[in-house]
Length: 251
Image (cartoon, rainbow, N blue to C red; front, side, top):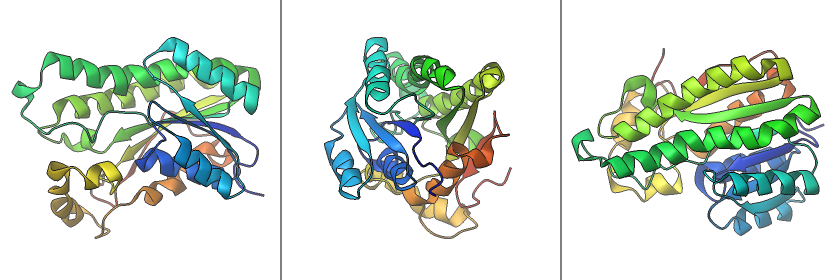
């Protein structure tokens, strides 16, 4: 039997890039997957279905409670109670690297609204379904930039640090409901957004040089950790952050 056979999973920010890899990976392990994004999800859904797996698409704004409520209701209607939430939606590749003195308050607020408030609102929308089911796994997606304090990206790094705090706070609060909350700290990954971003592209060589594993990181490198945190193999683990970056940061 596959590790996630019959489980219901919601992946936000899943129309492309790492989020799409998460959605396709979970489906390959037997999960029924809701591919959620503000962008068009049809190509990811079609690919999953073409492999004989279960998926539906859902247009959702992670900062809008009505949109999130509709997503939760659609998921339960089509698949049943939600057991897995991957809080992946975030603003990243669209950001320009710049000194913090040049980051406007509006840009700061947008990043915090999507990257921090978004996962908070998603959890609020999904946890009632998990409580009905008597269990759940929330996997938040943060970044290794938080550990090393990457420069020229103050708003993004700060938002991902907040996700670490949110993970630990929710883990402490939701353990009584058998809902476990953990976090993956993602290294610089060769996704579509990174490939198309000139400034991030320039960071590839020094990033690879800093790694113990001397190659580019691809979305599929994250899947083993994702499966572990989503499956029963991690049923006694909560409030933890797993750094997946090829050994660039070893603390």
